[in-house]
Length: 112
Length: 114
Image 1: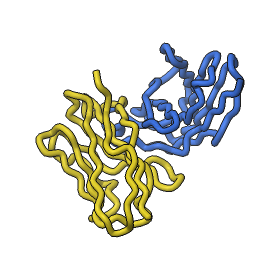
Image 2: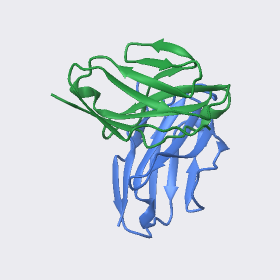
Image 3: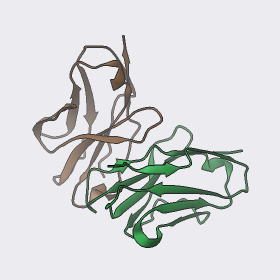
């Protein structure tokens, strides 16, 4: 599975847009990019997945440039409850996601 | 619909003792996974069941760990004898499809070995 690199931590304030970038230079053709969110004392939770360009759901947007060597998770107008660790994972849905490989994640702290 | 549940939420045992963790997956999910995070490290895969069969146990650290899933429903993870380095949070996850990018995680069991 492709190795990913994310910032260790980020700080934001309520109402701001937060963008977390993940680097995955060795992404393979069949790999998808998936983001999980983990709140304190809970297990990780799937939030979004994409292959290229842009994906949007009710929680976040995912931007993937043409070369796919990076991706950006965008959280619009964050609230205190968005304080969590965000993990970027890369793998092929037909083979690689049987065992998720978590990196260090990005610890997002949202302040009032 | 109930999510993945784990029991106990916390366990404190002494080195050398035995502990059994339990995971109840989402009903109908054939795939069940165990992960753990030890002492500030990253979450690591332990093993994957498809129904009652072990599909992949490449992440099991050693033979002190025994996972079972009799009947293809709930699963147990036994650590015997427990060592200090086993302390951490053990997560269970389940998914409906084998090659699924969406795994549903339980809240975890925090294990402390003294």
